[in-house]
Image 1 (cartoon, rainbow, N blue to C red):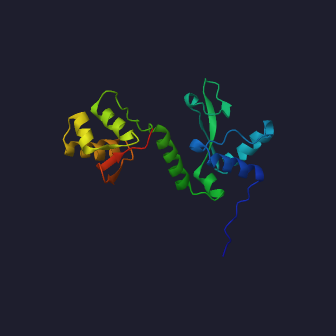
Image 2 (cartoon, helix red, strand yellow; image 1 turned 60 degrees about the horizontal axis):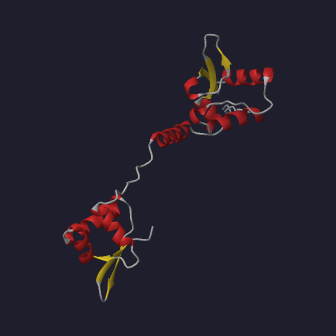
Image 3 (tube, helix red, strand yellow; image 1 turned 180 degrees about the horizontal axis):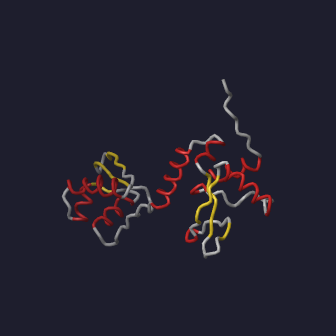
Length: 184
């Protein structure tokens, strides 16, 4: 029975692979400080030979860091392969999922913040609800000309659901049910 061979990484190789696993697209550059010249070339060459790093064309539009120039106006960068991730104990599927989530998050525009136009009945409703005394359905009906079911629909739909406002209501002995918004 043969023992599975255990891969021994140098400290430098571990640092390169670990740092790259946390970067977008698993790019292995920049290399650790102090790793330059012949030492950098030797380390990277060994890691490419073992299948842990791969040299790929750099996307200059994305400002990916260059490993070397190819002489034809292009350059290459270094990325960690699935084998490189496995050797440091990271499942490539997990890394790819995290990268996809980051990419989706970066591409997804922030939700639009609804703008309340001045002079509209909705603006009047919000203004009335923000007063310290709040407003009753009857008061809102007088100010807007809406029917009671329209007002309740506007409070539940437009204000609460669409605008995300927290409308509260409380029964008042003298005035009846009073609706309020927190003062802005």
